Picture 1 (cartoon, helix red, strand yellow):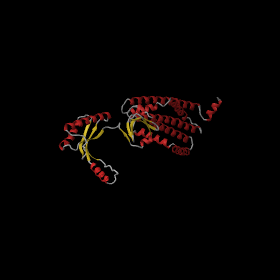
Picture 2: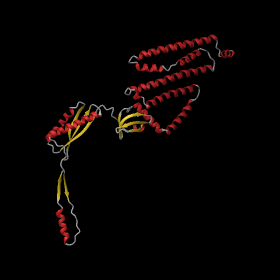
Picture 3: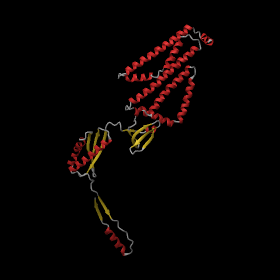
Picture 4: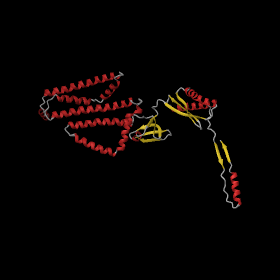
Length: 383
C-alpha cells in the first residue's frame, strides 16, 4: 500500500484529482457508448433509403469493428489526460493515444477496404456473388489491407522516435531484388489484378484467343482456365493471355453475317437481276434477322457470285445456324423455281495418246514410225 502511495505521490496525483479523472473516464465511456448506439441506429434508418443505402451500409459494417475494449481504452486515456502528469509519463501517454487511435483507425480502414472492394466488384459485374468472388479479387483486397497495416506500423515506429527512412529504403532494395527473382510470377499476379479490375472477360464468358476458343471457367492467381469447344480444358498464363487479342462473344449485341451464293455464268441477265430482291424477301421473313444488302459481286467464266449481308439481332449461335440453314434452303428453292443452275460449267479435257518408240532396224523403222504417228489421235472428253 505504501508503494502505491509513493507511486501516486511521485506523479503529483492527489485524491480529488484522481476522483475527477475517474469520473471523466466513466462519463466519457457512457457518452461514447451512447453516441455509437445512436449513430448505428441512424445508419440503419439511412440504409433503408435508396439514395443513401450504399454509404450507410458500408459505414454500419465498418463501425461494427468498434469493440467495447476500444471504448474502454479510449475512456481511460481521456481520464488520464486530465491529470497533470510529469515527464516521461506525459510523453508515454501521448504514445498510448497514438497507438489506441491508430489501431482503431487501421481496423476501420481494414474493414472498409474489404466491404467497399466487394461491393465494387459486385456492382461492376453481373451482380452474383458466386461469380465475383475470385482469387484475383481476394488478392486485390489483401494487398489494400496489407498496405493499411504497413502504413500504421511505420507511423507507429516513427511516433516512437525510430528513424523509418533507412528501414523503408531497405525494404525498397529488398523488394526490387525479390521482384527480379519472381518477375514471371509477379507478371501473372498483376495480370490477374488487371483482369479483376478491368474485366476484359469474366467467368462464364465465351472467348476466342489466338488459336483456341472456349468458355472461361476460372480466373486464378497465375493462370486462367478455359473449357475449349472440343471439351478439353486449356490452361494459359494470365500475362500470356493479355498479350493476345481477346474476342469476347458473350458481350456481342448483334452478329453480322456475310455469305456468298454462286450460280451458272449462263444465267440470263433478266433472271440474274431478280435474285437480289428475292434474297431480300427470303432474309426479311425471319424475325431476328435484319437484311442489309445483296449484290451481284462477281461475273466471270466460271460462275456469277452474289454477296449477301444481314445482321442477327440475337447473338445465340444456334439461332444463327438455324436461320442460315433456312435461308440456304429457301435460296436453293428460289434458284430451282427460276430455272437457274448452280452447277459449275462443263469443262473439256483434251487427251492424246503418246506414241511408243520402237527400236527397229532398216526398213521396218520407217513403217513403225508411220504406224505410231497414225495412232496418235486426239480424244475429247466432256464432263
